[in-house]
Image (cartoon, rainbow over all chains, first blue to last red):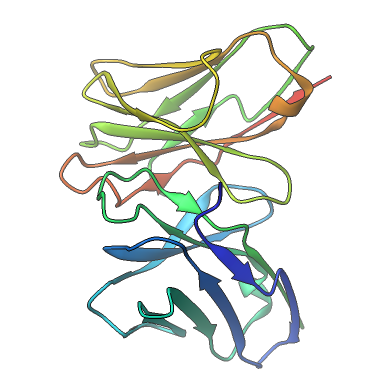
Length: 112
Length: 113
């Protein structure tokens, strides 16, 4: 079963706009990760946020984590056509075993 | 590029056949995890190998099996293929000390007809 549920399932925006994706999860976690996948290819790690962190930035990416609501959000600012991809959140709970459980993903389309 | 490679890229098999997929880990990584990703879904954890031993398994039947070799490359074997096995199969390698730091390969697209 999926640990995370992403919302929305699909998102279409214009270049230059911001894109926000949300992820909810079911169990306690030590950390949560976000991945990007282009056209059914391999996953690219974007960012990891630990359970004691509330916000983390990496370039145009901003991730927030609310452990009380068991939710996380990924914000991509000033989006580009190259950001068109599917985005997944994933966590291995509190096990730190790397047995990741992924959400179903948000498909982002950025129109030029 | 993550340094993780998978072969073949694409594969077409007939129901009932057997298939072997291969993964070469990033240098220095002794842990490999395999995932199945059906179309439109997130990846699902199949199993993990650490130092040539199975180190955990997801909700997959025994006809899904694996191997990890001394050089830490890995195989995923699926017997008695079913139509629902059609998916993208992803492997990810990680250092043993940080198993959730995973580097994914490009995947093998398996189609079962």
